[in-house]
Length: 194
Image 1 (cartoon, rainbow, N blue to C red):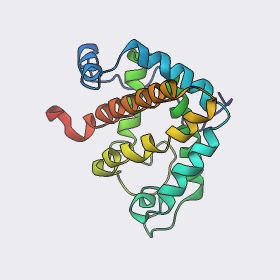
Image 2 (image 1 turned 90 degrees about the horizontal axis):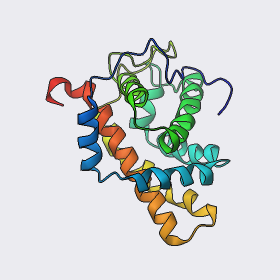
Image 3 (image 1 turned 180 degrees about the vertical axis):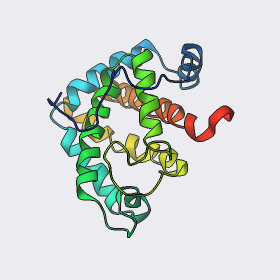
Image 4 (image 1 turned 90 degrees about the vertical axis):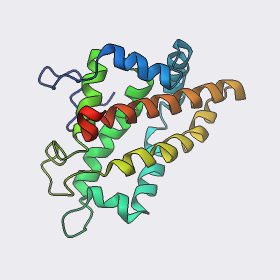
């Protein structure tokens, strides 16, 4: 892990605790068919992706940059992309890939998922990086990004030299992990209806 990632505070004691209970997390894991094998597949994915994170981010940032409605979340009120904001988020996004593959689904993980969620909503968007940008990321875009964030990962997972079955297992585990996290990130948007 890089020495310092701007705004990355996984495990910090001042993070608000997640309102999601351990039982609700287990229920969500059951909903996405999460198993111990998925955790093992993601551990292998972490090894395969080591050294490829910047390449993955290049693909994702290219996609965001090519879609003005997505790039708007990183732009000033006049619509100009804020380069420093994009760069700071990029560092955290790369660490999110690592965390998705390696972190256990425990209380710290839940608390940081809540922190990530809040940073997409009016509650905390722009505060971590002290930037003037859109006040929130529309939930519809957070949900819709599940597909490109999962579909584009497979070619990178295939570069590890594993057989097709192992690559499929890594990719399915990645898809489940992303879907699970987006379900958690929806909580502050939905409030009690979550």
